[in-house]
Figure 1 (cartoon, rainbow, N blue to C red):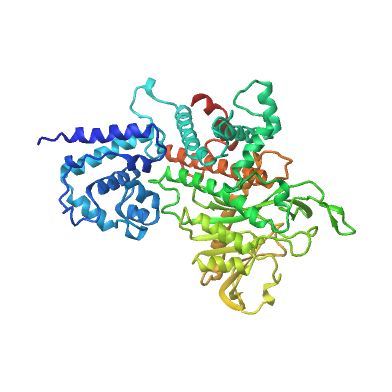
Figure 2 (figure 1 turned 180 degrees about the horizontal axis):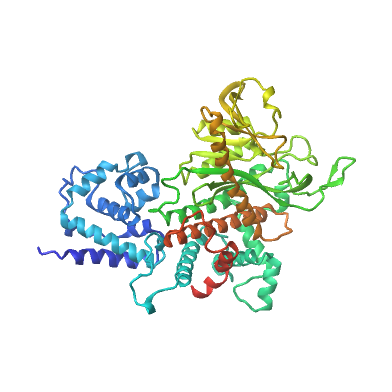
Length: 578
């Protein structure tokens, strides 16, 4: 039989293109792809091969499209069930996934013509996947040709606009479908229209009421009234197995934490899926590979202005005061607000939020024994979230997380941690067993024991370094780290690493800059708007990362487009251009 190899590759690409028109992910395209096995040559004995020809062809197609080496792809297969399902490997567990040796053996037993077909088909599928927003074009940028005719050369601004528009469209496609309200199919406003409206509220620093009123005034048929909007947002955060929408009173009981947990889980399931979708859309030039992966954990506040006391002198709290509001101190002033903890990549990585957790602490206006979340549990959950996406090396913490339980949780995972010490001996010369730098005014206290359950869990180093910071309690900033041993001359290096934590301060400033206004006490609305605002921040940061990859710019440079511009684009003009 005479075989036309280019025609075989083209037939695979044509089928892939038809699948790209209605599938959102490359693995779904690969899963449904028809492979003409009869036109391919595989020298392996199919009766003895653990993985058949069609499986291995799909695996090599996916691997080449995404730019994985055999080792990298084998590692992905061993940890990601969606890849196993996409290639339809006949395995019962991830442990039985194909190894690097399996991939190599199959490739070596494909004929030269078959290898050329797979390589040509992978290139073609990659192109059609980019054209249909299934994967990101930024990984294979086509920069303006320096030798092209002057009339054909795009300006930097035009190129930037083209890439940014395509990337924002890609972000919407991979994120919005994960947040569902579960409303009736015949509803007037789609879930996408609700989330576009949310983005417009963020861009305008407005509220559901102001945006709904503007939609009414301008006869915008894609903007609903505020009650419809808030009802949809509540449904996003309502657990699926609730028989009816809970009321505020359901979350005001003394044992309400399990119900708050269910709200959190409902939201974070969507947040995790959306974040994973975006990250998977850029696999192949992974922003987390080949770099030391450092994450920062911190807490931010959304101030709640209502006074909690009915009669403070008599110790009588106001009835119906939101259970999730806690007290905090800022600029020597005691305030009240909702608290959220996040874990965010910092340093030389794309600075995205990998997890969000509600924070509940006991407050003076609450009865003794009121429910709260421990810092150790919060950190454990955040680390679990982050480790779904990246292999962490180090965790940087705010001084509010100074806790034996927190440090034990991190140390148990074989991760490094660094954190300020909130209280310490101001004069380090008075401390025994301290080692000072010969020339610099700095010192280390070695092997400080940290206990857990009545026993020494691990030891850590206390680092003393001079400071004039207003945040310091004395003449020195003191940090604790579980590095094996820090010499005095290494203090600056460790402290400089901790300084990268300040990326998270910029993050909170950005998220708060477009956090929608609301007076609602319904915690579903409060947590949902913070989670959605955090996701918009992620989309902005990942879009900025991909723009810089396409334009060959350092990712540490200032953003190519501002957060405000991005969020306006997300909610406004893209609905017009499709």
